[in-house]
Length: 422
Ligand code: LLP
Image (cartoon, rainbow, N blue to C red; front, side):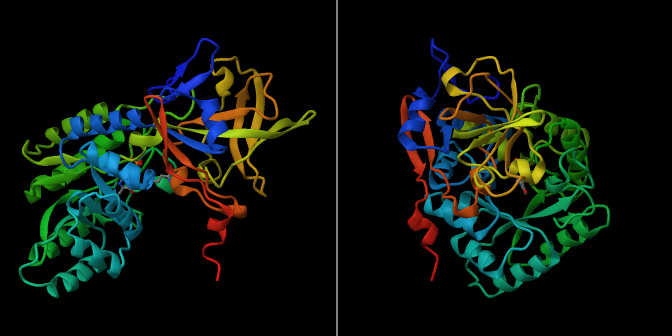
């Protein structure tokens, strides 16, 4: 149950509901695969982030973004971290004021920076000397009365977070940010301070994603904090990256614990209390808010080898197992608390062996073709990294709350698959 959304509940027969709605009924109505998000769960995590960090804390939209999600995070008092022009446009289309947006990216295009300046994004996190030059050119050509964009410098604290190497970003060997150790960060600060067109407000670091150990964040906070103390700038952002539990037996710190540990580490290095300390969690806000529902279409028992259970989605709606070897749990919403003695491999419908949903799953003994099968903790980097591989349409996304479901992203159709063809 600890991996399920906050509002998950079992009825007397053992059937699982989320947001007051029976999951099997949702699968019947909307089809499978289906992403089901518990809206109250997301709201609660946003509220926790705002309470823990205060104004300025941003939701990292790369984890999951659609207009409804952008609006929800904004309504709950969060800013939004947008890492591309596309994420920026979705947030604006949702009605989020540009002043609540933070623009990221290690290779922002001229068009992206120009658009950010035109709409007046709240913050730009600067990542390279080439970007400093680009912002310089664009701000020089603006009218003298235009407001100056507020910028932060992204630095690499030289901390190797304990996580998958693909999502580790705080070490020296990285494409992101300016190294503190090499002096590049100091140089970047000096360059921005000399530029009349921008207002340098702070420093930023992001050490990686799916990080469980608070010590990695504390180490990064110490480096970042010491650097910030010497600069006397009013803002500091410790990035995102707080891990979440995906499988039984994993435990992650809460957003509140993460904030407390970081603040303590910053205080230890003498960061003044009036500096605005902020963060930008993505996964910790949305991951465990969602469940993916699939339908089982084929079961293949290979004697002496293993049993394959094939579902109607796979690497197109969740590429994380094939990309990072990520593990998930699987269960049957029709009897969610049932014993799961049967070891199987759950696979998708794509044309490759790597198309695994759960490599070593345990399922109830009576699992059968036609069953709806659920994987929890799919709310982050599932839909947002979904693809049309094998021309599989992306599934719909529903938000459920207090007995009502609303489709926030409709499922793709064959027309959508053909939309871009000349
Ligand atoms: N801030 C920055 C600058 C980031 O690069 C990221 C994530 C975040 C915040 C949010 O991190 P979070 O709190 O969600 O861990 N696709 C991978 C994760 C990639 C994360 C990229 N950057 C996965 O599925 O595990």
